[in-house]
Image (cartoon, rainbow, N blue to C red):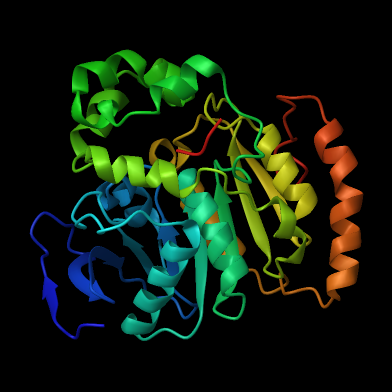
Length: 322
């Protein structure tokens, strides 16, 4: 690890610090939103092709939580890695970054594609990860996918480089508020930059064949699952599957599309901070055998639920990751 840290606050809001940090020879663009709370920091994994700035509205909506986010290699301000990587590789890289920043315990969140990396991190580093938040995501290749035309649109990074193309497809791709507020598309597109072709391909390759299904039952962390009710990319049924198979999980539905973390940042931040601060949510003491029994018991209702079913609002049961 390198002790050389370069602060590059130009272009960042006063409360968000950005650094270039070298971790095991890999340079990472890291953004830290400093909060005043006493809890562990929140490590956020972003969606596919997404530079950290796309999460700025959410970071600014946090009221007390310190949050850490970094551009994965080949995206935004992080140079591409020499070789392709797997989710386990990114989990190790993130754990090394956390150690470099001096933290012994963190909370972890992941959005869409980043939700898969967050699941891997929680599985790989259960003592480091205190709580887990999964937003608009699924258990990998075993997910219930969106429609073929929607998935086809996200197979290339063109929407990150061609703003006219982004304007044409955003409503169909992201759903929710993007269907009714066309001004959102322009603001979102203006924040996109740095999704390079090979870097994007590496991200697709990372989750090819990956699934969390065999070990979701073993996750000990209290887990909050957030899903959009109008998500063309990751249908809400995937949230039900995650809820059924993670032993200590709750599911909240948000009346929006795939990018509710961007279009409803205050609501999303409020739900997450309330969950992270809830002292009643602790690791449930249970043996691996009992967790596996619960996992098996959850299979039938999870996969038997009608596709597209929505959970009631509040604390209830309530494509490819992007």
